[in-house]
Length: 151
Image (tube, rainbow, N blue to C red; front, side, top):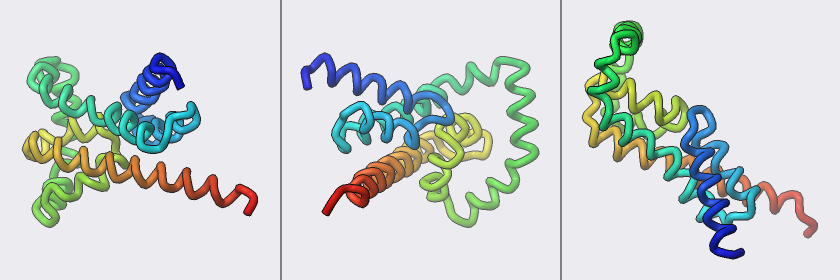
């Protein structure tokens, strides 16, 4: 594969991972379907899924200055924030490992600070969770493909 082909496939995989709802679940299979090896597909898919988190955490104060968004987020925090705080007090920020890939990195980056999770914890535990799900997806695809090949 030429360097230009690789960069094109890597950027496509990154882009798929960046968009909400697609994230790592779609990015890794898309990268592998494009012809990237499993390690590259996981790397670029995880990177694409993770990048919104530091960007949203960095711009969080600016987001909260938008009146409509602020009202919506504070209403959301009142509705579910207490339950999240209870889980946090019971399990700590470790619950972000399974929840980030399930809820989405965009959601965790916006709702996490409302519930009192420290930005550093959001970054670390979300990266771990996204990476684990990306690796699990690649393993499932790789082993699943071998199930269908002739012995």
